[in-house]
Length: 363
Image 1 (spheres, rainbow, N blue to C red):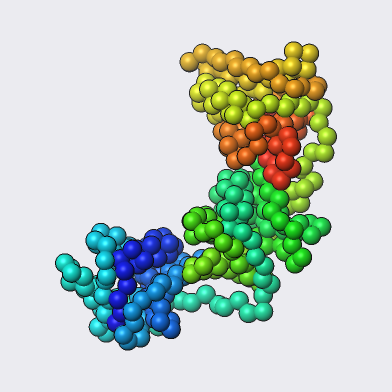
Image 2 (cartoon, rainbow, N blue to C red):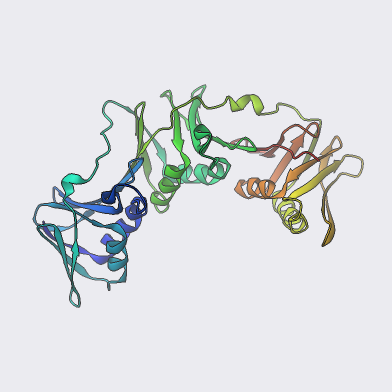
């Protein structure tokens, strides 16, 4: 293998794929990145056996070949090089890197030892705009669980209902659902949130369409020259739609930014009580109150004028409320709840493509 690439392109490719390389795994090869000539292009790939990312970039190829080298070392080294042309040359199991100012050698491992994710053959394929997928992931990922004892809750469910694709995540304390797009294909995929955080990284600057291909075991996201393949989570996702209230005894419509502000201030006084705040809505005075008490620090009351229907109060985790509000786009939002032990729903007062549900705390 002998080729020339620009520092900018190689650095960007390594930045996209190298984070997947597993430096703590039992297989040392998983801490390496695979460099391989495919046609007249250089393919850069890394995997941790659950997720694999590959990126292709233009190169002046003189001879073909393939080699794996330590991902962290190569990424940090290339990142430190000045912009310009880099020459890469394979010498048996070593990679020679030459620029105007540097001549370096990195010891590698044969590409034959590098694990390859099985190809998705005959799977279902569909497309979605990158900005839409990016927004959806930003709105639902925070609700996925990090508790590995319940694997299904560590994923995001992509599912079609009546010809419409939805993305949903829940950790059993909160739930986020985003309406994405109309889709003819039947889709039901449980994708690890860890993989979707990487999808979010690779589509960050992409403005075109994302191609999604999947079978019963894997899903592939393709954005331009970058591909990510991830194993799907096995298991049955809870029927979360049964948790979504259809009517409320108490509702308030108000500016989202104002509710964020008073919740943030109140949360300062809620640190001692694990973020516990009391949200009260009063129809006669058309007001919403947030009350927080810290036995050592004092207490805080904040109020806003709202369009209220019904009166009641509920105890919530302030961090969950702030996360839900910040994930929303709508300027005016509706907060609705029934009893003290039933779920609270946040939704745009006009747009109906996103909703956020939070379970109350026992007051």
